[in-house]
Length: 437
Image 1 (cartoon, rainbow, N blue to C red):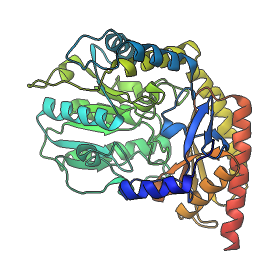
Image 2 (cartoon, one colour):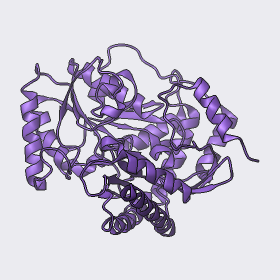
Image 3 (cartoon, one colour):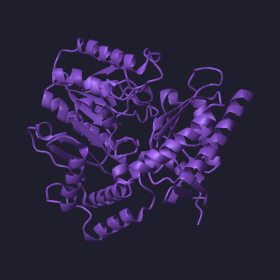
Image 4 (cartoon, rainbow, N blue to C red):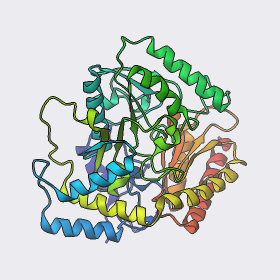
């Protein structure tokens, strides 16, 4: 059965906000998926290299998750945190152990935005300060508080905020004033910037919030060890470190289970936020913090939908599958191959400035051929051309000019090879269009 996508688009525009973005000139209605593939309402099949913004982390229609959700739905859908919940406690126990944070406590939310919002509430309450450090080019969510710590103009609809935010260097390795430095010198310069920035505050800064790999920012990352070096400075001042693992968690980077582990020289973060992939499409997020920080709130609080029995069942099944099948190892192996293929393609194309990333979290930054100028036009052209060839990718980054590639972690070598071929063809076609004028 086919559907009139054009009519649905018109209905969407009539009732949805104008700022609710849709990909593609002719937006897609995805109707079902299996493994690493999805189908649209017209029956077209696509290799999914974006996974619902890194959320379908394991696979579409993963039987283990579908079974767990179905069985839980047949028992009870909702209770709230006012009642004991066995699946919530069981998932919290597993995440607390995996987090690396000592004496950890876990609070479940329904999204990454809400998780970061809760982490900011905890940090500012614990430190009794509304001063927060964030990274340039960062993104932490769409709520009032998380927009206030987002250092990305494209995703900052307001300058109003309950927080006083100061932005430090380091999240973008290949652009900015320190881009030409070696890694050791780069880290030293960013640490000096951090120390200087702290001299501009009123003292008692609450926290630094940072994505180990910037997601919406185009999958940019600092050299390994930057946040460990930052941590040394922060610890002297009692400033908390919040690691935003909404996109980097659960082994996606291949080398590590958490993004912060690439910066582990001075221990784990004080708080860790997660969401997206853990639910494999279910609305599940949360924050992990050491007990002293988590328990600092002086008032009652609950979560109506956080820790829902059905999302907890999905999370438990998904996490179990991920660990039992070593999907972190698969991300490292297959992701490494995919990055190699894309770098080989990029070597012959002026439209590609950089292929970066690790594991199955890969960014391709595009420029106007013959320049270093970011080209959002190129990103839009590649997005459309990839779709025409049966491949879905995302975009974002500096000036909206980066492709974001993040397939489900069960991606096979054959699928990686096929996706690289499709993307290579889309990139070559795009360069021809731009050069032709």
